[in-house]
Each structure stands twice: as structure tokens, then as C-alpha cells.
Length: 234
Image 1 (cartoon, rainbow, N blue to C red):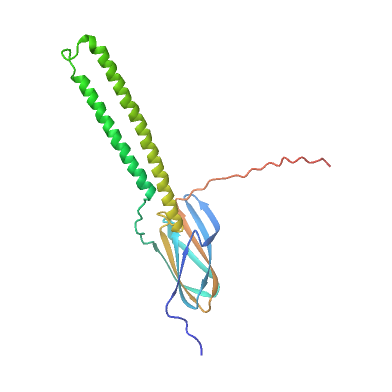
Image 2 (cartoon, rainbow, N blue to C red):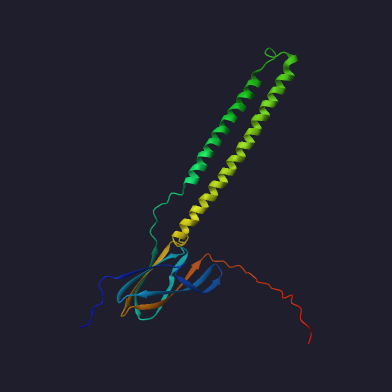
């Protein structure tokens, strides 16, 4: 007695940039056509293939799918990938750096207040408050104190800039790690293709995905090599 194929579809999930081989790229003015090859195993009966990580600039009407193997393609659809749950871009290191940055910002604020207070004090002085013989000493004291405050402000601003740079580096590391965990599918790779397949037997099949994208550019790279090996003339 023949065994009927299972009713429930076998789900296959692939990421375009990870699970395919780029066979060909044709670049035109502002447009490119890509051809990718996927190899995967199917089970007897209905299979539902989901390919994620396709660029958002894909032209839906250009999509073509061709299979090689013991399976029949039933339907093909393209859609946007559902938004991911927002990830909090933070870490213990970032929290520590932000705490240090807050302390530095508070110190900057205090020094600015001191500078304003010192300026206001000097402005409030009149000829009745300071004898002429003491003006030079007063101005020297003011200049000395103002210079110390300014030097501290310069140092604190450098500390703040350094902390900002460390925070940016840590943010970039987190985003990179998350991108690798997602298979490289970020905001730019936000489209997916669903393909229904019916297989009479289990086994590996090949599937070619051809599609066009807009906003494409190309840059020429040259590999120049010089052979300096001396050879005797014949």
C-alpha cells in the first residue's frame, strides 16, 4: 500500500546572503540583475521555502524562480519581512561609560558656573570697592583663577569626547554582533520570498533565484602584478 505524503508542509528557512551562491551579476545604469543558487533538502510532500534577507530595493516584477530536482514549484510570493522586536543597544560597558560621561558633564557644568560667577564678581567691582593700588593684584588673581577653570574645562571636554568615542565603538560592536546573529539581514535586507514546493521523494534540490534591484552602482578594481624574476635570454 502506497504511503500518502504528509499533510503538514515542511518548512525550510534560508537566508539569501548565507545559504546561497551568487552565480552572476549584471550591472546596468542604476539597476542590477542578480542570480543566486540555493541547495537544500526537501521532504516528500508539501514544502514551504522561506528565503529572507533580500534587499528592499528588489523589483518584485523581475523575480524569477527555477528549480532543478524532483520537486514542482507551485507558488511564489514576495513580501516585507515582519519587523524585529527592537533590541536595546546597550551593554554593561556602555552603562559604565555613560555613568562616567554623566560625571564629566556634571563637572563641566560646575566649572562653567564657577567661570560665570568669577566674571560676575569682577564685573560687580567698582572704584569704591577696590583701591587703585590693589587693582593689579585683583586682576592677576582673576586671570589666574580664570585660566585654571579654562584648563579644567578643556581637559574635561577631551574626556567627554574620548568617552563618546568609546561608546560609539561599543555601539558598533553590538550592532555588528546582532547583524551577524540575524544572518546579516538588517534594515536594507528587509524583503522575503515564499516558495511552495511539492516533492515526490526526499532529497536535495537546486533552486535558482533571479531578481533585479534598483540604485545599483559598480566600481572598477584592478589587480596589477609585476614579475621581477630575472630570466636568461635564449
